[in-house]
Amino acid sequence: MCHNSQLISAFDSKNQSYNFDRSFQWVKSKIQNSDRSFGNLETTIPISPRDYSGYPKFGSPPEFVQTLSRTGFDVLSTANNHSADKGPEAIDHTIDTVSKNGLVPIGTYKNLDDYETRRYYLFSENGIKFGILNYTYSTNGIKVTGGRIVRLLDREMISEDVRYLKLLNVHFVILWFHYGTEYYVEPDKSQLEWVNHGFSAGADLIIGGHPHVVQKFEKRNVIGEDGKNKEQYVAFSLGNFLSAQNMSFTDGGTILNLDLSVDSRGNKKVARFEFEPVWVLSRGYQVIPINEYKRGELGIVLSKMEEKRMNQYLDAFHKIIPLQN
Image 1: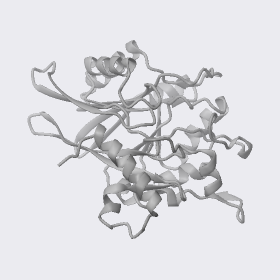
Image 2: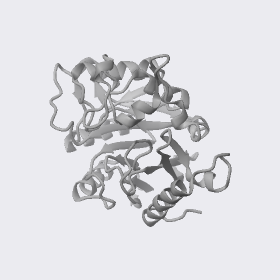
Image 3: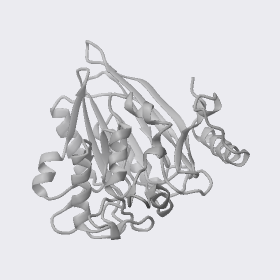
Image 4: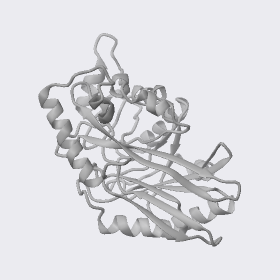
């Protein structure tokens, strides 16, 4: 996310430009070292600088996306409740800006042709085929006009989308849901219903956001259509990776690390489903990987007050996500 105070912090008055690089300097290597790195872009990129703003209607400069590209992100979900904040032209400009900076936008589309072309995001790594689908519960009541499409949560659509990916022999189907109740540490009824439907449709993994706090994860074992044991994983909400929110437990989030494999017999395996807590240092809005900081690997020292806030976040985090070996 990009709130007003982040815009102010990143603005270079001398050059009349923005630079957000320092926000990611402590996590950049992690993101770059992954085969694919994904993030939720919960802001728009409007055409006019007059439209740059934070809450309640988000609009950020293109430099924000340029930083995400340099940081190593590969794919950005653009379907969330703020997708239409700055109007239809900003939906187009967000898609174009993300694409021009070498990243893949998923979940929003400029027109029907664009939707039909990019509806299914498919990619392969080491011979493993992936398909990712992004949906949001709402656009905050703002109408999406002029033929633009923001993919909304819809039972029939989810079933159809997953079924199509299965026909393409995709190994792992990943659903990316923007849903739930803000600031609730427990998934609400609607989240449970959407996750159950996604898994019933055949998804392998479901990753969620919107509550702005980290929520629990689950592992399920079912028998697939082929008669083989099938693992299904859900991370209900990853919290705030980067934002200026500072209420209790909103000042941080988590990196979710996945290692996925398929053996010679076609058996799929989730070898790693690991959560790495991060906390946002409001001094410069820097994402701090907490474990590395505690091991003294970052070469920085936080004030006692900052460490206290970080530790409060970490304690709350581990009540939701137990320590992992």
